Image: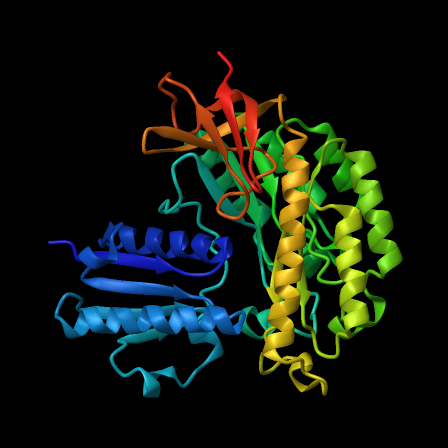
Amino acid sequence: MKQKLGILTLGCPRNLADSETLAGRLNFKGYSIVDNIQEAQVAIVNTCAFIEEAKRESIDAILDLIELKKQGRLKKIIVYGCLAQRYKNLKQQLPEVDAFVGALGLNHESKRYALTPKHYAYLKICEGCVNNCSYCVIPKIKGKLESLSEKSIIEKVRRLNQEKISELNIIGQDITGFGMDSSGGSQLTGILKKIISNAPDIGWIRLLYLNPQRLSSELLDLVASHKQVCKYIDLPIQHINNRILKLMNRRPTKDKIISLIKKIRKTIPGVYLRTSIIVGFPSETEKEFNELLEFIKEVKFDRLGAFIYSREEDTPAYNFKIQLSKKVKEQRFDIVMSTQQKIAAELNSKSLGSTVFVLVEEKNDGAYIGRLQGDAPEVDGTVFINTKKALKIGEFVRVKITDTLEYDLVGDLVQ
């Protein structure tokens, strides 16, 4: 009888892609993959260790599994991924865990066991990072940049095209670094052209995490000109004050970021611009924080994620002298999020009365929920669709917007 195996994935979509790789390999070896970890005999928890909050979540998840094992409901626990890679002494602290497995490297095989809904998928084209930001522990965990081979990428894309998924999300720690390990320069535009030509039946192709330092005119032109590629630019700037950017080891200066944003909006009319920022970085003054806040108000990003600076050992910023208090960091985070909430509501209100193209995501309590091409899975907003017609999950429909919320939209199906 096949052993039942459950995988709990924490953290980012990159971890989810790793879990799909792992599940594919273990399923091939004869394990039966179950959706509910409570039904499993063997549990794998794919951990995140990027910031303090993620580490706590990982430890809490492990402790919950240990409790299930004590009750006799689990036979084995395997801790996999970033936490195991980063901390080598966990076995002493968590003796109930049967194995700790760090990074397995990129999956060059085309097989995957889908853990996402059937209508979309993630494709990780590179692992590791070349940026060495002073606050970030990823290079310590993931190592040097490694790009997936073109052959492997095309095989995976062709398989996903055959599966008739609606949306393909291209991911990596920084996908603009793709190819730099072999050629010294970004090869993202070239591989994207090949992905497009091998995915004629995939409706949307989305790019996630584009470092402003290497966002080329050629790539922007491709996004603008190709219908399949979502008009969605995920551009983490982290801050806007030049002194803080230098301390963070982020290359683009304020002037370059401003001119790049103008260029993006000019090249791709109607683009959805997403960013992420860090508040409470060591020595960030109130004046520098206010400079960031004013910039956010002025630019009006369509989507914005904010992080409270997390002091991580083995990073240069850990030893920076002026560390801000938790209270100050949380206050600044709250101010940014309430500011962005108003901006998002204002931008959404402009959609009232318009007709938009929506990907149907799920049916919940009799109502259909979808996403715009400006909404990445799991992280951005949704569209609530009013209709009595039966819709298929994964189909594209037209919806007329009748109401707007802070982050979400409501509309009627256009027959």
